[in-house]
Length: 284
DNA sequence: CCACGGCCTGATTC
DNA sequence: AGAATCAGGCCGT
Image (cartoon, rainbow, N blue to C red; front, side, top):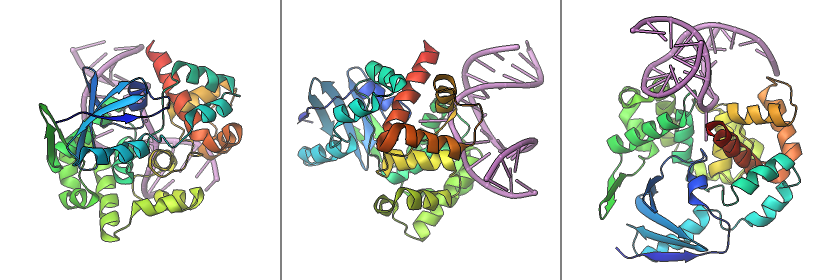
């Protein structure tokens, strides 16, 4: 159980990155965070310019390129932030959370999480993801920390709607079961959506059960390499109405087009900053 | 294309 | 206290 370090030169704040609603698997335990990526348990601790980690992956050094991808350390965040800061509301949000980064997640767990996210709150999403992993996923542990792997689409499909309902998914059970089944039967590789254009990948997602505009845009942004994606939930809509004098209750597509024009090719980053800032403001 | 009601569930508000 | 509302929507009509 050795500790390994990933040295980087990028703004990175684990707390805001993990708690800004893009991912639901990370838990804080003292100065360490633990979570599961793929089949492996990861523990992370941040020091200036350095990410310290422990993992069940062997050899441990194999995790370094994976973390590099996961945290999108290939994005030059400073220059993205500079270009987004032409917008004063976004600039203000960046000022508060300069180390908030978008993550590059695995598409299936990401899709599943956001199918579960409809009409509910973050606490309950975490609970549902947790229940799915505990009931259907393999156990992984390091030292005293034990977590469970998020089950594959095949395992979820085999479990079936009734079992998912018993895990507390409610009406989302049918959506997740159906989508898992389609993905398994067509051996549809969600990763292939990365190679498609934003519009093509989006249309493909929209055909899946439980996936509408908002869920599709979350999956595109958080796992499919589409940084122009601009998911609009209640919070983001609220910000647009309050800070940009956007009329209330405009249709989703109209708002999305406005935002992509306003914020440009990295509109998704703007969304993440605005969303997180607005939510924290409410709690204050 | 838009508007509307129903839907699982748990916490919070009225 | 018990009902309505809210919470990171989607689906069918």
